[in-house]
Length: 237
Image 1 (cartoon, helix red, strand yellow):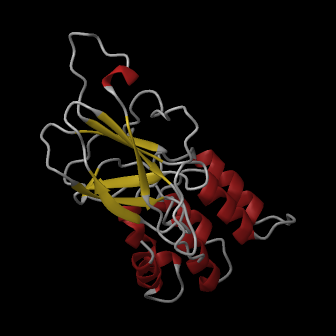
Image 2: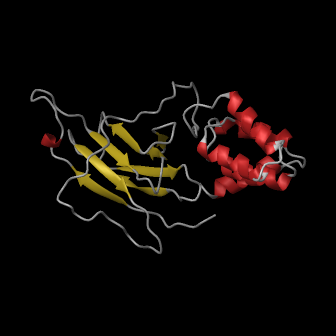
Image 3: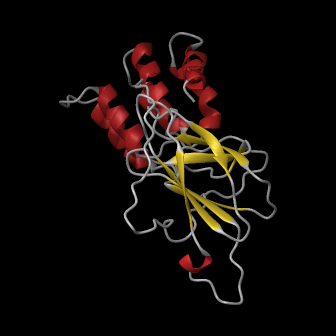
């Protein structure tokens, strides 16, 4: 796995007139955290509380009551991007935007002034999932694909196509939304546990229902492979 150093958060504070608010309406106290195409979608935790159950490019947080600062953790959907930790400091009845930047070799990247304030993406970007009672995990994508797509991929993996079965499987798990049962259908097609472990390590970051990952155990020939994968995952979150 590639090693990236942690990025930092660069803040942009907006005046009340930056947003089209009616004169008789006080704007909410809100913070936006915004990523970019290189870093990709992310999960946002505020004081260890997960804000969005599906990874997004931008997450908005409304504060009903304020502390001086909040601890945050940003976990990217891309497995090669290491998490970011930091703090945010909301201002009463203001909107504040935090921009995420990537850096290497302890470099700090901050946006150069262009004379134009960067604004949040219009509107909030709430998670698309309904509330799930007692669920405290995270969901890797919005909604699982149709079963017919999985059937087509399995057909390609088992036919004499130019690409190797593992390559087909990697393409689908990183570009589409699969649940663990659909992933299992791909795993059993692969010829050995080494390839199943490789695909599972990659797929976990993108799965719809990561909390069901342990149910993949019987897709492996050797016992303990799921635990091996989860050990890897836990070290790289």
